[in-house]
Each structure stands twice: as structure tokens, then as C-alpha cells.
Image 1 (cartoon, rainbow, N blue to C red):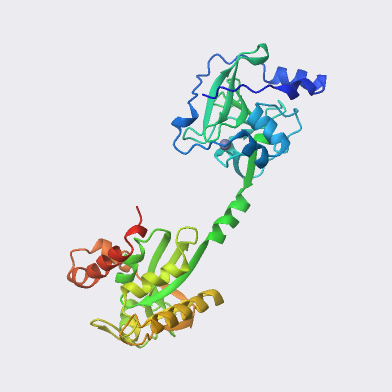
Image 2 (cartoon, rainbow, N blue to C red):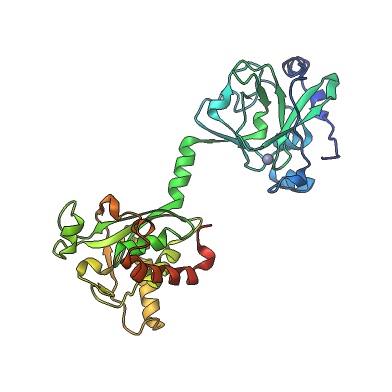
Length: 359
Ligand SMILES: [Zn+2]
């Protein structure tokens, strides 16, 4: 429990009319609410900063509300009328507290919510200041003051989280989609039999999705059988969607050059034909440059006895292979090819990238 009780100094400086509204709006007794306060040190990912650090990070108004248990003037907050879709986070630490569908119009002068995002993100404590018996709510992660909780809500939960705009940061759905898109990247790689390559990338941390299919050929929607003839020009490929904040294009390439042999032209072990060629299909200049530079580096360092024959080609189209080719290794572990060919590649990958496996 925090032991320091800050002075609610600015309440006294609010105009009289606002003070009255404040006390009326938040003045009900809240006897039915069970407080669930915890000591900050009990929370595993709690944030603790010095008063000076908070002062530096927060605006004057945020500091007053979040760190000094202040209350912004009624009907003044920037999020009071906000109806956009999105998430309301703690303005001090980014802890996600409410979503737009939890907000309702309470006419009390502060943003109001009828429930919180589950997971103990908000803690509450009795607040007996100003001659009232209320329940104060604060962010469980940083201890920032949010507002008060009442049991007079008009929705089925019966609850009203009365929260200061200054305690919140709103991130709209549009902004979130943009953020996610910026961190995701896609690359298409041919490293021989796609069953093998897919199985390996599925295990790498930061890889969101791996699909087996065909790229680089001349006909549309080729079947597996057609590609196997070697006449369609397609290569067996995997299309990898990955999160740039958890892995990187460099790491994706490192895995690629670890788990297949880039020096055998149109062949991986016993699998022969142009459909088994080693190829990187790049989508942009960055992918092209990185592919060429890692190949040049591996050649220069003589990592392989023979020169690398991996093609670096512009991506045009990816055709998803039939469903029974997806997650093939996972579904056919006992099969001979999987045991003989795929398993050793996976073991090699696990050894080299031990620390980078999905948990
Ligand atoms: Zn917080």
C-alpha cells in the first residue's frame, strides 16, 4: 500500500459551481462494492518510478490527477464525448483498462464505463476523504489514480467507473490496425520441399503464419501434381508472415540458409526438379537488397563448400497448396519422409536457434 497521501490541493481552487457538481456526481456511498486493493509490489509487472520521474513524464494535469489523486473539472475532459472505437489505456503506463463498448453516457461530467477489461488491471481502495465513503480506483500496474467506482450504473453490471480523461490515453481502432500492419512483414521462400521449410518456421518465435504453396510459375492455380512435373515453372514455397518486433528479415534468412542447402541447383537431397529450386521471392527493394547481401556474405565467408545458387526473384503471385499439404509434418510425423528428411532439419534448426523457439 502506498503510504503517502497526497494533498488534494487543487479541488479547493476549482470554481464553486464545479466543486458542487463534483461532489454530487461522485458523492454516493458505495457500500456494496468490495475493494480489492493490493500492494504494488504484489503485481508482477508493476511499474515504480520516483516522484521526479513521474513529473518529467506527465503533463501538469496528468500528474495532478494520476499522482496526486486529483479530479479534473467536470465536463472538461477530452474523452468525455468520445465515441470512437478503440481502447482506453492508463495515461501513465499504457495498461489497457477499458474498451469503447464499455463506455456509456452517464451525464456525470466524466467518462464512464460499466466494466473494466478483465485481468486485475484496476485495483480499488476505500476513500473516505471529503466526508464521503467512496471507492477509489487506480491502475494496478503503476498505481496511477483513475477516479472512483460506484454501484449506480444503468446497465446490467450496475457499475459506474467514473474516470478522469486526464488519467486515460485513447488509442483508436484505426490507429491500432495501422500499428499492427507496420510491424508485420511477409516473405516467400523456396527451399526445396515445402513440408520441411514450413515445419521449421512454424517453430520460430515471431512467426505469425506459414503457408505452403507455389510461386514463380506460368499457369494459374497449379495443382501439386502439375507442379511436381516440373513443367509449370513454379517452385514449392512457404509464405511467412512475421512480426518485426519479435524476429526480423535477417533472422528469417538465417533460418532459411541453415535448414536447406542453397548450393545444389534445382535439388534438395533426393528431391530433384526446378520445383525444388532455392529461391527468395522479394516484395520490395529492402528484401531484395538484404537477400543479395546475405548471399554475398555467405559466399565470401565460404560457409558452404560450393557457391550459393539461390535465385533472388521478384514476387508476383502465391498459390496456396491443397489443405492436406498445410502443416504436413505436424500431421504426419510417423511417415517415412518426415522421419528421414524433415526431422533432421528440425533438429538442426532447434540446435542452432534454441533460444529463438516459440515457448
Ligand atoms: Zn498505469
